[in-house]
Length: 102
Image (cartoon, rainbow, N blue to C red; front, side):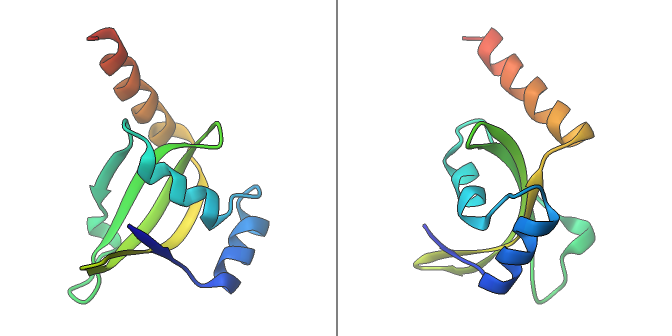
């Protein structure tokens, strides 16, 4: 998996979203318990957008991305922020349910 992003947008993201960098955001893709979904509201016919919620650097992050290529798999990160509200609760509930069953 290869990650790509606009560096100017990354710098703006760090300033606007509590210091969350796209480099840190890429780590959520390694989280076994990450919740990954198609973002129907922000997808178009030309670009499918996805949201993944997972753990990176001891924080639960919400990352929006698109798949640029499948071979090789290239993921372009669009935005990233600390998960809050329902996003954070959903992740915690999912992970807790998993832990309880094993």
